[in-house]
Length: 516
Image (cartoon, rainbow, N blue to C red; front, side):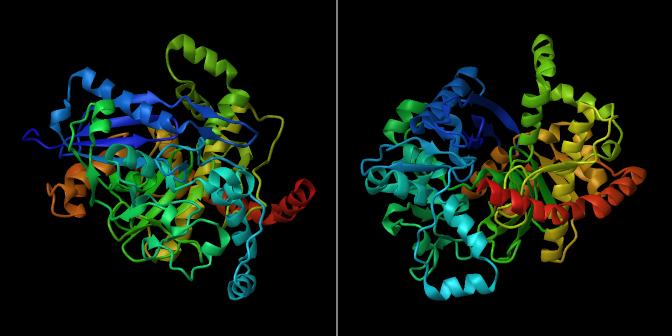
């Protein structure tokens, strides 16, 4: 290894796999990216990906990095993996995939057939949680697999998340970080271990403890790069691989959000607002916080499931001309949408969007649908686009206020990352809607930086996470709320948006009954 430590962050997102070489000050030495193209939709609402394709993309990205000539395999002091959350993989006893991975946006649903213990059934009914537990059981991929592909489920020796699969391919060890365990699995988010034998989750999903991977603490050594992995990736045999955390957790860490008063907003495919707590605290009653990318800490997260995917939806439905123009200019269509925000006034002339395009487990509940109200004959597609961005900002504000009520600490600043954060107009809208300063981190690769921070602490470069955060995270721009615009948004939020879901709830329930 070279004298100067270099951490290789492997960031397997939804759209692509990126390998990023960071130095110990959080600076990117070089990076390479390979698009993920092996997604399939066998049926409407399903989303799958070839399992080996994930590691092929990782290997291609590594070789692309080496070929660029700015970093060499022998310089890599350690590897940390961070991935999209809740993508599940079935492996046989020899570690071979039994079917394509079921990717996190997948919407297939299982029948509710479990025999829950009487005491738990009683508790769920008394607390009004039965619809939430039913939705959880229905969305659990394990249940769908057992019901619809029983032969595959019977041959599943290892049921792992994407992170567990990549760690297995790198080290040969069927193990994964506690920081990656997000999804419909029997994980105890409070103890950061697999659930105890008496936990009700075992009765809701037919998985056995021995099918699940060995759990490793964040930052602990998972293993070393094997001969096979080295031959495929170009990494040196024996390079240490450390346990990382899920991409959202690493994004929060990479944005420098290590206390409740520094909020983290992700403008990604799934938009989220996060607060980091060093004590276990549920963001909503009976819905657990996620593991943070800091050992024994938690991310209190409110998620808008489809989030800035709404921009992609807008592009597909209303942006064909922008797509063609962008091609001719050699830019992204999304960059042209900035003009749509600049040519419309705050508030979109009364057009208000609530981004519940997909139901949830808390608020919104399983009955929810998206809505857009306030149309007049003066509205254009530019107003629709602004209403989408403002609606996402309103939803994130609702989440922020809820988290503040849970932590009893106001957020004095918001660090914003993800694709949407690259727009100055979006950053200003967030600042104005939240009436709170928003900051754009120095690097767009916040998830990768979070993984690199874990690596530096694991290697002993920094003695603790606070020291690593201070040295490695930096702010590039700060956006201050516009007082006049903030007043307008306050009226729209408090008088219209915050009442929208409750007023439409009966209609959502009727639609649910009609189309169930």
